[in-house]
Image (spheres, rainbow, N blue to C red):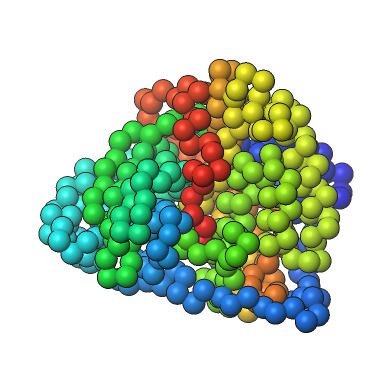
Length: 421
């Protein structure tokens, strides 16, 4: 590994903020510049897994087709929260009502549409920035799902609590789009062979302070993430027999989904505390041509994080603190796509720290951009390289005090991870 990459990787891993955790491994991939043809990374005689054709299917712009599982319920809840926070949902009444009809159970459709209109009216003004009125072509409205906890589940109904971060504002004018945190609880019912929303509520969420090393960008820097410039990630809840994402379809959308899942998996706390899980995850997601190097560097990064956080074998500090790491994808952009290879840019929010009594290790959030290089191999999209680029940082939450370090324990467990794309 070139010295400049190794120095930055270890420097980040030794830090006490989100960049030290979610980005540490990502940097370990970034020196592999050559895209290897799929034929070179497929093993002889390998039987390609079957891709999930229904993954990401849209009806009136709303993802549908979830498995009747806890992961499927998590994915539905997450996608519905993202849709309800989008600029189109907030600004276009006709689209909003069609989306509500797709997402909601039939018995509450009218009431749900009226409630959605009221909620949209309350927050639409946030898309103005410092302009006199909303410019929808320059609006920024992105939602990232950091945590998803299933409060109750059976095959007929589910209740899912999400911890989300939103970025709202405008790429026009002078006011930087602003970050906020919410807790959203959705009640779902299995109807018409899918998870449908019975009801939802939202309150203020745990506030993670923005990494002090990240200064807010100016409004015009967000122009690539206006509605026409980038897409929201879509979660499916579809996993293979190994517990990792089922094969991704051979399309540009499939490549975007694979890139999104890579970022989320590298930000999972098990990446740092569970070597068996880490190795299985890398084997499932990384191209064979880079697997050996990536695994070695990932192990070194994980050891460094564990040492610097003073974590025991159970992933906890001596005083009971628990490692909290999460990466939420706010938006995706295709850089290039050929069918054999793809390059996808992600805008992410990565949270990292320790939930415990030491406030100096309180989880913080870093807003990062990264480019994921993928190759088509073994019947799916595999990761070749993840290269960080300049951060894209919103203004901090308005007049909201950061939550205590201990309070983040409720979102830090492996079971609180969102569903995968």
